[in-house]
Image (cartoon, helix red, strand yellow):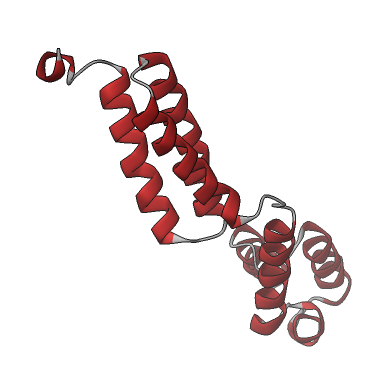
Length: 139
């Protein structure tokens, strides 16, 4: 294989995200100087386990940055229901609907489906009452 074909092969790896720009430039330089990358490719290409460990460490660092505990989401939902039952003020219902959206976000970040489902239900319920869809039934 000639140098142009080898560089095209390396470029494909770069476009697929299998190698970084630095690795691409190093391999390209090696091809231009030697005419082949087969020996270099084995040394510098990341393995599947290396890519997986990079992804896992990124996921762990992303989760570690989310400092709001799960119980806060549940407390928001409970407080929203208590305020809903004790008051009949539309503005409070809408505000609690917005708070329940934040509760959904907490459940999403913690990957906790029960909190997400409960928060979506609470949000819809609070907005429905807050926007007055049921006013004709009770007044």
